[in-house]
Amino acid sequence: GAGVSQSPSNKVTEKGKDVELRCDPISGHTALYWYRQSLGQGLEFLIYFQGNSAPDKSGLPSDRFSAERTGGSVSTLTIQRTQQEDSAVYLCASSSQGLRFDEQFFGPGTRLTVL
Amino acid sequence: DQQVKQNSPSLSVQEGRISILNCDYTNSMFDYFLWYKKYPAEGPTFLISISSIKDKNEDGRFTVFLNKSAKHLSLHIVPSQPGDSAVYFCAASAIETSGSRLTFGEGTQLTVNP
Image (tube, rainbow over all chains, first blue to last red; front, top):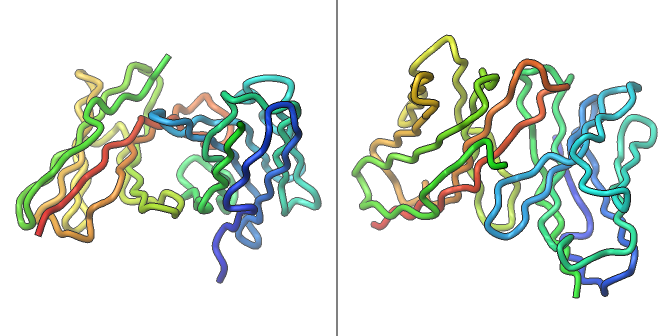
């Protein structure tokens, strides 16, 4: 079956513009995660969705960041009024049930560049 | 604060030799550790994991060692192959965190020379 897909693969935007990043998890996976990797840094947790529960937004760096997951499947990460420090690779992952030892499957990421 | 650290950004070894990648952590609540491997333009893929109740886990050419007292883990690859050339991320999770969110290190670029 298909893995996790993300679009676009690359996004270049101007400072102050809004961007939307999309993630299609593996079909049937109830848990979905967003991470980002800034240059020279490890992957940083942003937000976690599990089924119909309220998302864990504790990793979002500011209120300019938000995410939705519609119908328990596709997720969109929105960054408003982008800043240069938002430049990073944004990675989405899904796992079957979000249990501690469920493997997280990652998408290829979206490389965001804010000029 | 960087709770998981990989102090070596890069490592180069000869094909057939052993590769040793190191990882240190500071959060004593971490009890599950993973290694991920990442090729360019692809997402990280799971490689091997270890629970804190163990000090060693082996899977083929890959072995992970955990030293809880030193808060240190290492990944051994033997023998190393050119196809192992990739970025390796160490990751950890703690029982009190929601779901299974992972805390990652910065990654180590491994290059295996033929």
